Length: 359
Ligand SMILES: *Cc1c(COP(=O)(O)O)cnc(C)c1O
Image (tube, rainbow, N blue to C red):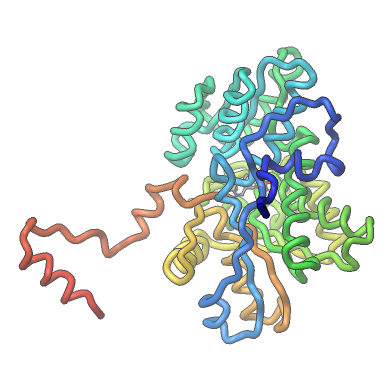
């Protein structure tokens, strides 16, 4: 029978390109292998001849790309004998760390900013049994605390300063190349700590240096205006944005991301919260794809640069949709001004509501 082998996660698939041994016990939830979806309706509406693909990372096991890094970070932590992991998080890292720690049978400690984490992410960290420390401060303060506590406590830090995280995350670039049978012309990402844009560049560069492709994309990073240190050219102390996943003023991969900018000939730009939410809604309404607000920053910025011609016609563009829309139901519902229609449970009012909305 023509059955293909069961997909068992990105470490098994890319074993020869990752720092694991034959006898390494792999901690996996089947992450990676996410769909690369070609947009149909949105490119047409720009009036420009471009191919836009979205890499739907929200379909990873815990609903964000963080799982690609976490399978590596937790696998290596366990290999090194660690009994606990720790991270600071705007939400998705804590959700992922909690799940992979549960899978490995070790403890996860997560530091999250009080009141600034989307509901779904908090639910994940709690239900997987992580020790959740809600700090009266923002992500950047949490990150500093994690570094300080990590120095003399037997816990492994699984933020993206852990080099195994980026190793896992680079596999997204491998998948894109394998599907397109080339590298895209442009790759657009939302940027917070800038680990992911760095990891993608590592992946593209690895396939380029091994002669699997003869071209690398221009890397474009978009930030939320209230939280845009790469645009300001310096750290931002009180970042604010509705896109809580990228509410980061002190990016941990600052130097690495500037290097990506230089080597790829790319650029950084910023999007307002209104632009980010509009792009999120556009994707849901015109393409049926639900991502969280931070993720939509990649498309919001790309559309602006396509319209202005900065990204020229004839280009192929990949936008990473970093996390699933279900992570942040509150922001989604707030955006839906139409609300829901409440009617009596009788045929007449139901029929009237349908006929009145057939359009
Ligand atoms: C973590 C995260 C980001 C930012 O990624 P960095 O590697 O910190 O730049 C963007 N979007 C979502 C949904 C995230 O969870």
